[in-house]
Length: 89
Image 1: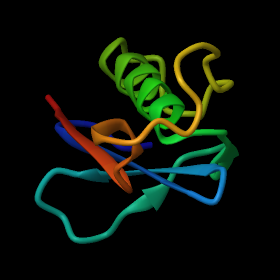
Image 2: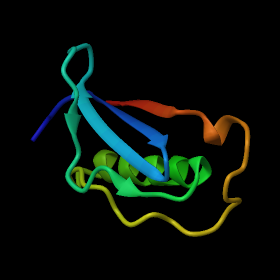
Image 3: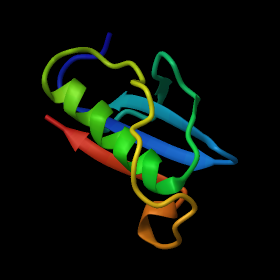
């Protein structure tokens, strides 16, 4: 279990979201339990990322929840970028 300030990174490729976490400033990333997870679009990987960040901030530990439904599938633009990152204090 990681404590303190952490970074969460979510990448999406070929219908799967991979979620990793590290202590801020450290070079080594750890795969979050349940990752990679099936995820049909980059947009939904962003929603998944936001849920993981929320769980970490709430102190609920880090595991990959089910992929949220809704939103456009295969949408182009920022949400279909290959990765999302958030620093959490």
